[in-house]
Image 1: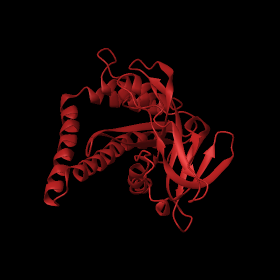
Image 2: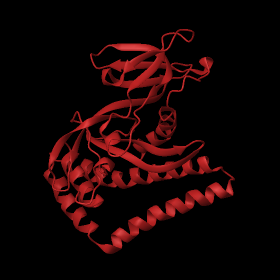
Image 3: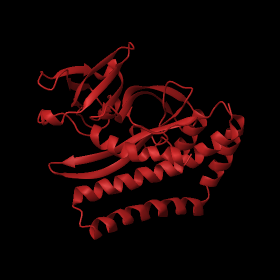
Length: 275
């Protein structure tokens, strides 16, 4: 599994590329080649310009797809064209040697509450694949920006059983609320659902859930993530990084830590569930 997490090196760049919205100010000569796989199975090739994304306020913003339209050019000198996000299944970006350097995939999603009840979600999300296994991990970082200043907000991760055609979020930020249950409760139920076909994994999740009730274990987890923040800020100061670069570094470290944490759970599924 360790080798599979090398995907994170690929995806850190991927997340940064696809986090850029479309403003129509791109240098034409720098536009990369792109291939769009559409919902009907056909493909559209061209040059990737960017995308448009929804604006709005909480909570309505979280009920919207995170991308509305993809902007591309059929030729570098041609006019911009749009592809509706509902018509696109995945996007690949190529370098000058026609090697894939970035990719994102459209995720249809379900919501799992603290009691294990499952419902369809209205929104879809386009995310890079961070780990490819029997249970896959997709995700990226969300930043909040005001003029020229950006801050790391949180890492949004999605898990999907490789046999499913939908994903669930271990931490579902658009469902947080006073009566929604703890983050740990919902995380456990999300993994239970992703690994619902394996009785041995359910036994492991029983043990893991009991472990989460231990105050010392929770303290260890909280301390680890607190130390990650300190590490990022200390390195940013040492290397004389500006505010935005330090926040990017923090996001990279946090995403890596979540991958390690979720990866430990997935290893148990892969070890106990050979089918």
